[in-house]
Image (cartoon, rainbow, N blue to C red; front, side, top):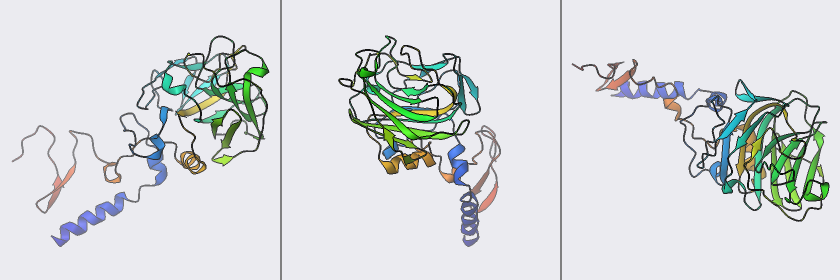
Length: 289
């Protein structure tokens, strides 16, 4: 019995040495939302760069996006600036009163103003909804539109960071829309100093779907570069939560228990401990003698 316990302990120690980076990179469909965890509290859209025909929303609301033009590159979508986009179906859960939070991990190609993620795409040539942009200089911008028109007065708040992103370098950008006059912007988990402008009346939605990589305003404002993930919360995330998501963007999904990470597929040869005997198990469907 002691020998058996020692063997079990040894096996647990070996699997416990799996690095955190391996846990974070193990992205696959079929993982379940991390119920009861803060990272799923208020989560209304959650897309990770797992290659598929469409951009799969793994939140409870399954608001999947249709990919147009953008192509898969590793674990992200490459947008070349020519009206590439992910179009999301209209869903009221994504278009709620503030506070709201937009999150995305990107690798931008600088040189033009481009929309990273918007919770209201709008096809009527008006500023609407909540949007994160990257401007031509690499500054992160966050906008609140009032659905009243296409001029600057229809941007209730338009915050721009003083810091800039680096061309071709990955970064996590977050905008917390607290109220009409308050937007917090984070880059790689760090709060940023911003300048502000805009005099719009209020937050206004157009009742159209959200967009990733494009904003259907007057000139479309296509993003250029790679987008690896995007999520929307119907609450304002705290600074510590934003830092945690920067470290591990997969937090909203449950990770497999560490002792199951190397479990073989059903029907393959695996080892079992049975009555003090350690050895290979029979294949599923075979006769045990």
